[in-house]
Amino acid sequence: MDRMALAQLAKTSKGDFGKPREMNYCLYDFTSRSALDKAKQEIMDRDANWDCTIQPQADAPSRFTLTATQSNYSITELNYREDSSFFKQVAEAHGGQFDGWFASN
Image (tube, rainbow, N blue to C red; front, side):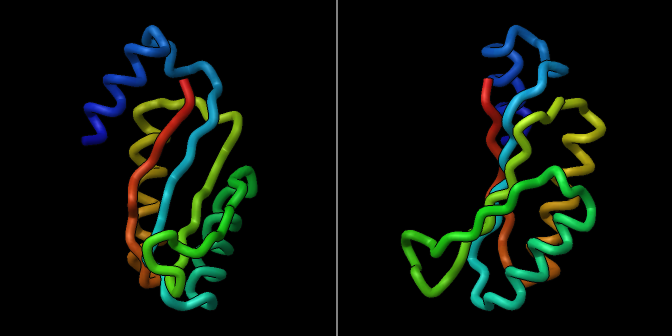
């Protein structure tokens, strides 16, 4: 799925991945506000340029989502792979799930 999304992004951005854009990583299914706060802190400790938004899940209001947004993100193969791996690890370590990512064109 990531390859398809990256291919679509390459198409719409005419292959200019280096162009800064908004990047969002989405984590969900957190049942504990404490665990969610720890996940947010781990993200911020790694890179303070991420803006983390916490909201109740639309389909399960007793659970929470965390969206980490960076407004000036340049996609490279290395930082995309490292960040995707990091966000997956954060979700698992704190009882959440990794939902994926999306970027602006």
